[in-house]
Image (tube, rainbow, N blue to C red; front, side, top):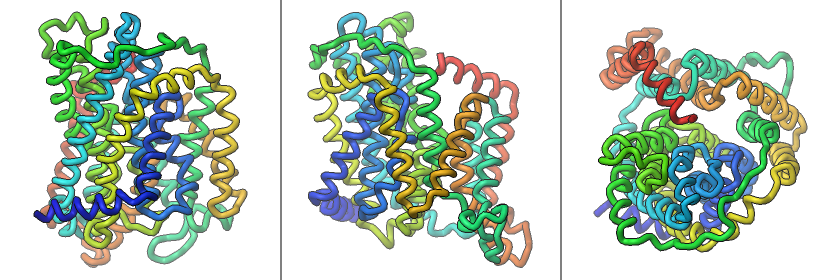
Length: 502
């Protein structure tokens, strides 16, 4: 009954004209971001953080969330029509979706992606509403020691699930932690690593580092690799799947939703791991695995359901524990902190209208997306023909204006330029910047909880092992580390990511 009352509260918040408008704007922009290859939700949310300064907190979070799960829908369009995933989670969708388009079944593939995404998004939002309150209740029992151990587990798990070399991922985490220490000491207020630059006394600007690493660095990379995009079809027909198609879709959608909902909660997992795992599962259990890669509708429905479910269940640890499992959730945490909201279990008790309003908006956003994606497919096809070199100058100008408007300080623009160059170098060195951002966000929180725990225990480090919840989390961290260094697991992990990239 309490859940029902909370949902009524959420819909009363989400159904205001203002919040409906921002929800629609978010999912529309998210779809556009997904359709245009090379941007992605991380870069777009980083670019739009300055724009949310003038919005109420709930409206800002509703819009940013819409961009995230909207991009999962839009990414399938380019994957199917031009074999170029608009969003990294749609890489797997391109394998069979593009083959279906070449066979004249682009409409069926797009319909399968849209139906699977809508169902998965709806179920995942229900899971957030169902499991959010119990998890927040458990989190209220956490002290500084438990929070430190939980964040340590999150960082280690994000390294295990990161692409590429484990050593490079660990290096990115360490760099992020170091950058998070720039500024004033949490306890004493002493300046650290500022090199005498007054603008760094309050720490590195979160928007500058995220926009540089994920926004401008991605733009530079995509300009370097710009190539001719050939749209497979100029007009999409046959958007209504046949009964046979619907029968073939049902089981993959259910399996993808279940798998994505579970994997989305894991640190570093999110939508990318979910879509790849769903495709692997469908191929393994199929009686005719030879059809995969040649236009199997299961290869579209399963991964698309999984990546949408994974995208939305990644909100669970962020909203209930204040721990971001993915770079996008790290940006959401940053947006909440900018708005003066401390992410974690207290959000649900102290600001229930924000928590439940955000959840209710996800149902509304998923409805908007099913309406937007299929009827407007002709517009998305035309957008794919716009040359990239015409889009990027406007995006760069928007980035610079947005960063400068934060505090009317040109130093923030210089910082963004520096981190865009750092991000580009990291890309060239095959270093994934996502763990760096997670380390940057979690580093100051970890330091604060570590020092609080040590103060409360009068300097006794055994407090982390003697408190039961903290001890369990540390044991899990040790197990993840052991799994990471296991030769068999490392070999399987490398094979998986190589197959995904291919």
